[in-house]
Length: 381
Image (cartoon, rainbow, N blue to C red; front, top):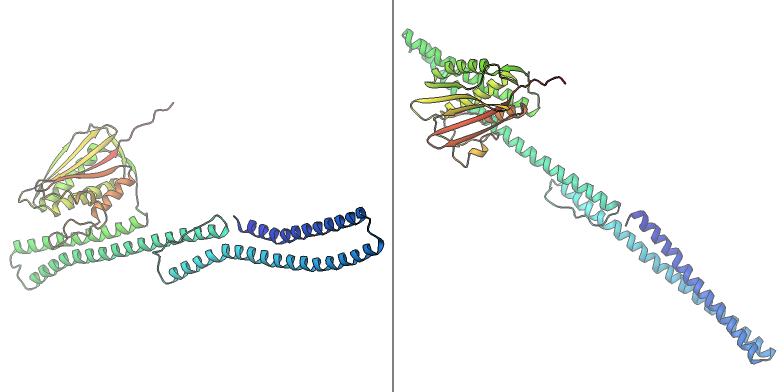
């Protein structure tokens, strides 16, 4: 019952109940007096006796009036107390709950539940307060997770920057101390320094791109891309990159010439680079092989990147595209990584209207798949 209705009902009870009682009493007194007069007339009582009876009746009427007033006042007070208690309880109970809930929130405790009873204004207020508590708790939990992820990211980046920096420092000291005393050694030292600085540059770019993901400010430039020419260029770049790491690339394109997709060429390159980097990072074979296959699967172009690395355990496979998820918890220096490379891949593919997934067998290798929708001309009607 709404508070306004409760007040109206209470007011009506306070007014109507005494009025009804008073009216009933007056009616009873009047009716009794009328019956007394009629009985006196019917019995033929003399005038003197009638006067005496009349005086007695007046005295009785006065006494009865006092009783009536006492009863009315008593009923009025009792009704007022009863109605007041009824209304007070309907207000006080939710106020006490709200006070306790406010105290919990003030103390930073959000692990409670505000029970809502009834359908009046205070119940609606309690319901809104409970919704606010749930939202505050969700925001607090999200902030805790975000803080944890940011700390983990800083830790990962710090660890992964330290490794190439240490290597660069060591090789520069070797050059300064004259250890690289032949042109061949000098060339090898310089190439190693160059490769390590490239690793650092990639880590910094990855961190910058990650910050854009969180603020939804990824700079996309979508355009029509010819599948054959684009992936042929990607394969050439990959081959040069993998040669340095001693990994062979096997490339196959099964898509007809003229097939187009709508995509951001730079970001799709980032997808391929992140997947290949992840594959080479966990390559445990002496002769590493990366296979890049491009297939036509109806309305989509499917890209497959297969490696012959150590593979991914079945329990880890569903989580590899989550941010900061790592299958190796030892974090040894040869297998660094910020833990966000594949999550970036997932984000880019979702923004392209495609998807990415993986299959893997431990000891054999992993296949990463992603699809892009074909561009199709809409015929003019």
